[in-house]
Amino acid sequence: MHALKKAQTRLAELEQNLLKRSLRTTTSPCTPHPTVDGRTLKAFCSNDYLGFANHPDLIVALAEGAKLYGTGSGASHLISGHSIAHAKLEEALASLQAPFIPHARALFFCTGYLANLSAITALASLENESASSTTIYSGKLNHASLIDGVRLATAQTKANTVIFDHHDLLDLERKLASDTAALKLIVTDGVFSMDGDLAPVTELLALAEQYDALLIVDDAHGFGVLGESGCGILEALQLHSARLIYIGTLGKAAGISGAFICGESTLIEYILQKARPYIYSTATPPAIAHALLRSLQLITSAEGKQRRQQLSHLITTWQTDMVFSSWQKMSSTTAIQPIILGENKIALAVAQHLADAGYWIPAIRPPTVPAGSARLRVTFSASHTITELRELISTLQQIELTVLASNAQ
Ligand SMILES: *Cc1c(COP(=O)(O)O)cnc(C)c1O
Image 1 (spheres, rainbow, N blue to C red):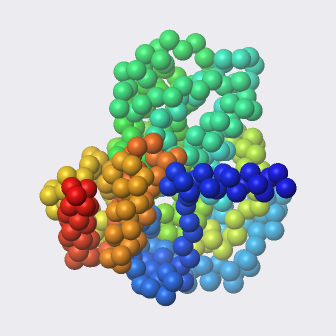
Image 2: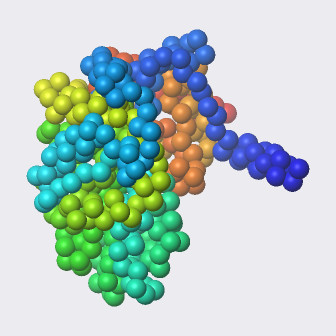
Image 3: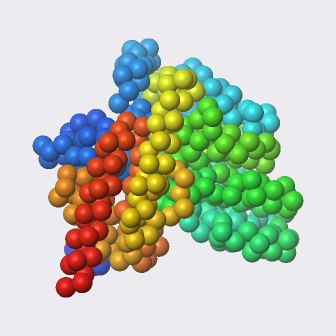
């Protein structure tokens, strides 16, 4: 069979280029100490930033949701799958963003990937009269789901794409200033998922105001974590505009699953009418929405605040204690702290040394990150202790010495 032979060749190529990935199966809940192959590991790689993925209140809420609403939604939202649990969740999500977005309304999605595809493809279809009437400005280091959203939008509409570097806003401004398209969308991560830095959202919004654009912000790594009440990057930066389309995901800090798009209500109604991933997916089980309501309460509660404080304590400890290392770090102030190692081979070797020491921090390689910037993506959870973090740092110090010594030979 041709396809089978081709698949074998392609897999061998991946293996040869050190790009083959593999699944590891856990047999425990997601905590800083998961069990894999009968071994308990010290994990610094999940996005469970607040440690909610195994929270007793959420376990109870999910079970309660199943008792109230059963296991499945049975249909897509627009057929018969939209439950009171979804509706309440959407209201709660909208009220969290209401201080930042006038007439805020939220739509709940099965995943962040689908929310991103939906927001971009639907909004890019607003202006479909002629070629070059829409331009999508897409951040160079955006998450794959935003990139795919832009690709799908340009395939479905006549939109043009312009890639911009969030470190060079002068260049973006020049491009916006000379753009004659009627509709402009600027698309960015809020917190960059692989570098950990924040997008200059204040400056991007100013450009959006000046050049009549919409600004789509994917805050997968900010929702629950940033801002005094954990509402995310718009709260942290105290922004307010009807041009903001805010996307938060609910499988990371919120500890469960799903995502939402929040924006000015007319724009959200349009997305609801047009977004094919929304219209043609079965609604998430209402029990999940029910548990998420409880998660939102936890995020904004004193407990959520305490967990955010623990997270910032971990981040500042890392920043002050990792200074010995000559490995390149990024200027990140978030729970995502990458160590850039360059070649895939080095990143894999360091990840293996860590695994030998009982840690779980996989090497992140292209195409997730640009070629030549393979890295360890170290992430913290409020469930980590400072002692555990200090142990990781001293292990990294020893590994760095070992790697340097073996390179010198
Ligand atoms: C994880 C992630 C997504 C996808 O969200 P899911 O709910 O996991 O599908 C989207 N954008 C960014 C930046 C992410 O990190």
